Image (cartoon, rainbow over all chains, first blue to last red; front, side, top):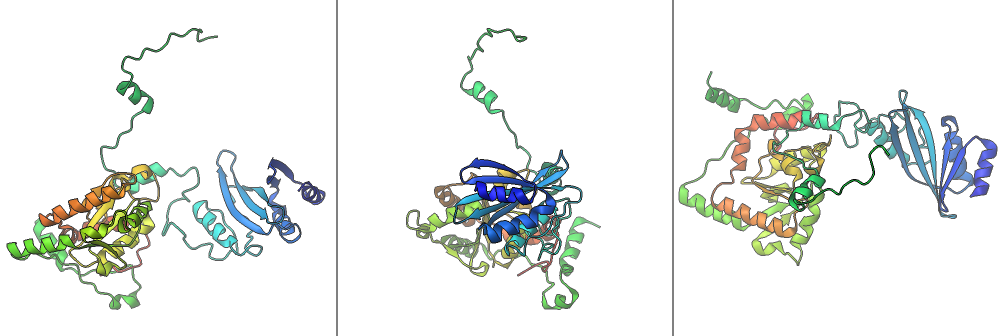
Length: 185
Length: 213
């Protein structure tokens, strides 16, 4: 595995992390991603795309995409992390490398609003039919507010703090132990 | 105008079927559902007894609770000894079990299947998600109260209810049918416009006829 990482490092600039013996992660820039994926698939035996997922880093104004690859000969998982701009939110489609990637890209387009130009069926709705708000998995979407607005609440729903509730029910005579240390220590 | 007059006028109006393309509108019926009044007292009582003895439920697992329906029909709990069996199509069945959460995409299919069932038809709502949303009360994609979209006869609380609880729910439904209290179908036709308004609020791409029978 170290040999493969070194051979990539000779060509492009990456950062690699070893998490376990069978799990590695690579951080790579957006423009090198197609080269890196096709290099790993065609020459180094990472033939299986397990999943493609996105994380919304709202504070830093970016999305992080993770492509998870698997090598059947070496039995090694390899995650490739790319950071893309949140405002532009556009990424190169990889449906020509792996045919099934269009389904992941369609899902990301619907739930995160990341666009993949020329990916097949990317505009069709997947789970949400006729959605009109901003994509729901973005972190600035308030699900509770939307739920209150759209669905009908049944009155009488209440929650209790489990700690206070158990104290009241079971330990009525409970006395808090005296503090030995001063608070400002 | 009085409220009664408005209701009578509404009953005479035909359905618009605006969701369909204009070419296909002629192919579908635009008649409203009509309510069925009970027969004479003793005959209706006999019919209700007969209905309660053979409840066939539709095999449409709308949520996670559908996993509890399989052990019901197999040898351990054996629901068939109560005269209850699963059926593959809405036309053959009289009980609709909404098992667990119903997402907005599923509600469209639930409405379609419910309207295709032949009356008298009964609805059992399984799990707390159908009562007040359960653990998905703040989700963007699952409804909170089922009784705003289709009429419900019996609720079974729990997350998830065990098969014993479902058997208890079926027995409760039988008692209600025998007492003549399960009138969900007439409730649906009387408040048809209210139900349609609620359904169309969440189903944004309405591309089916207004009443699918």
